[in-house]
Length: 157
Image (cartoon, rainbow, N blue to C red; front, side):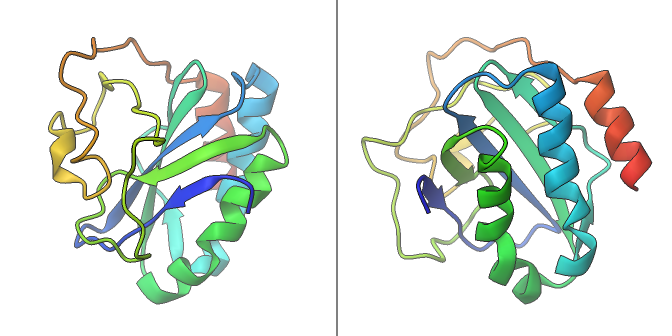
């Protein structure tokens, strides 16, 4: 895998992943990323979340609801490798991880993401990987909910 991947355990029924791409995906690439990722969910004990994907420049937030935690965990790396084939990925951080399931810890080279302005919790110190990289002082961004992306998700669901 050619990117930093921090994934842990959580008690929530939804995993929230923050992805940093090597460059800002175009509108067409955003749709392709969503189709690539979400098509694979039904065979992975997971499903689309009712929450929208959020986008800001090189960043995206991907919400996923799971039904079978172990089956989903086993294949998650491959799902992010698949979207990295559309637009190269630099890092993936499981934002709501409460325990460090992979034995990896956030370090100085983990890029701190934006302060998301929609639907997400505002206390980024909750996640095991974001406690060491607080977003205090980071201005809240104006994220994009891409209508074409959400339409593509609706067609897949």
